[in-house]
Length: 306
Ligand SMILES: C[S@@+](CC[C@H](N)C(=O)[O-])C[C@H]1O[C@@H](n2cnc3c(N)ncnc32)[C@H](O)[C@@H]1O
Image (tube, rainbow, N blue to C red; front, top):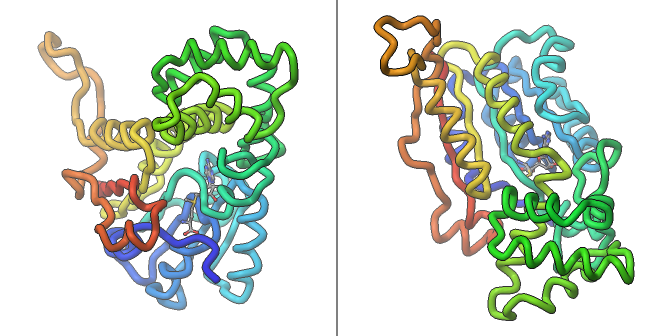
């Protein structure tokens, strides 16, 4: 049985691997779907460093790759790329890969609250040892803050109305489970749109409790620092907020000057560090989407270090 079907697999490999004996970083190793295929392509003297915040995913990959001395795995966030590389005496990579978001296993685990389809505690953290669970946010944050989270991280229309409904409901009973939150929200949203709206609401709380967007920005900048000239940064995102950050960071790294237009001579010292290899994002084929529904929103962008 397959635990998690890797998305845009052939496309990712094609862009990522430029040297079969090189050093690679899989920032979101998950259940090792992409990693296993990367390793099949690489020679015996190559290296693959992997990170994942989720302890179960980490343990799974530790076991999966225990007999492969090319693999080093760390149970930590990808913002630790510089630290884990230093521990391995690695100062630059031939390729860095990130497949953002959550895995199918996390969506189905019934413990983390990532899906509004199965009943589970409203946690939504990938690393359960850090920060506060979503239930804390939902039961304690003031109306204005909840509205802001729904707007900013879920682009939810009627964010204020939905936040007000949450505040009203929690006054009579603490909100602790996914299905409880779903039922509260379904009282005020049209039925035909409910899945779309619920996805956005759960996405908003997930992004907030994991600090996903700030961590992605930091990771991308650090990843550019950590690439060899000619090395590739390959990123798959699953929603517009993530994709915008990838697109804008890549664009920024292609600029050789960021001085205001009125400045007579450049004083910014900005270095052009990337060349974009995918003018438009690569998206999955109809066939891939048919086999793997999770792929439908995927966008892959690639840039090369100059
Ligand atoms: C879409 S899955 C990756 C699946 C993987 N490519 C595979 O084929 O099995 C995303 C993974 O990224 C992890 N993750 C999300 N944010 C992370 C972060 N900031 N640092 C490290 N891992 C992260 C999640 O825990 C999850 O396991």
